[in-house]
Length: 219
Length: 219
DNA sequence: ACCTATTTTTAGACTTATCTAAATATATTT
DNA sequence: AAATATATTTAGATAAGTCTAAAAATAGGT
Ligand SMILES: [Mn+2]
Ligand SMILES: [Mn+2]
Ligand SMILES: [Mn+2]
Ligand SMILES: [Mn+2]
Image (cartoon, rainbow over all chains, first blue to last red):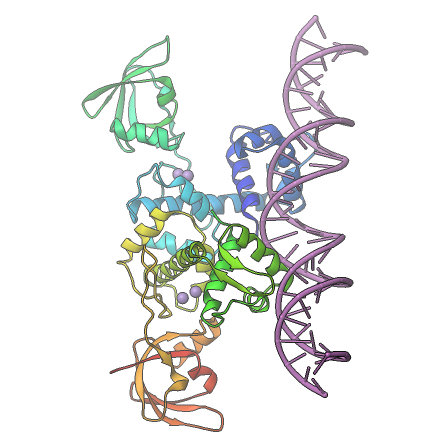
């Protein structure tokens, strides 16, 4: 079994590997983990000894097969618990992340399996992120950022990139939620802001917003 | 907020205070926590500095008001989670304790409240132990050990003292469960074993068994 | 190719929670 | 009351995870 800290590092490396395919740098990891580069180096050495990562000095770090499997298990638990909190315990989607950060470290395969079954084997968490199944498989939807859409293009809102409470509450306030249809009416070259159509309403949003909303284009 | 270790010590002191009203001894605590007396002394000092316990050297330790409140909160969470696992996730009562040992340390008042509501504010956990409410109140049932009953006396099985998997599975195998009526048909002075009547069945049980079953006498 | 800036690692320290071994206090027996 | 046994505390060590400051390696610019 691995410590909370080890599991958090594995999760962080997993998320950063999308952006840093050549190897996740010490500084990137320090930033993500909100800690110092020297602490990261220490932890990477430990993970490397446990064969959870592949590491060569100064070359960045990659997950091993075991490391990836472990990271996905933690992510699976995180997202299942988030779904549980929203669907069964009346939590809002902006309140669940921090609690899931704790619950994701509970060690019991049976608990995870039974929770999954109890919830009806959900495919996506409250933020639109895919929930890996018991074998670690999950589908990566072909989504894009709203900010990448051009004028007149439209699609369905399927996820959020930022899942901070501030951002999610902003979306709530403006009645933007997953599953809704969004059409780009105007796009300002100057500041990247957009005028969008959502449920017959017109709404102007900054680029920071459109940069954090995932859209699925309908074919 | 307190560490897992601190919370576990508080819980242990809480449980031992019933037996050691004058103060819980270092050795008793070491035994309960499965650790060394020197470690206990170290931890007691820390708890004392945080005003969770009242401690004078060589005089044993007692919970402060804050310490008791904290211990009861942890116990509340432990028992709510055990109830959840049995009632919602199809766990057997012998499988839930170790997982609840982990879940009891999750920090979120809202989670505890909502879980309690979701479960319908249960009053007892799967082993018959009372679940404290949000204010920390719980009823201590006037139960006694089956071993204290005399020949011809009877009552309802309302709890287990030992909740080890071994004991609980023994009870399952012999169809003994909470809520069932038990009558003492014979009691051996020699070894304390008993012949009991439970659901028209006669069963001979050792003193070790009758010493770990709580009975409520019907008035 | 060299100098400089940036990144990464190392060295040494701190905290928490644990341990063993030794010292000290309390309890029990004679 | 003294001797002995038991319980408890102290001293010093260890491991995990973190930090600061300094050293070493790499990357970039001329
Ligand atoms: Mn989350
Ligand atoms: Mn999520
Ligand atoms: Mn339990
Ligand atoms: Mn219980």
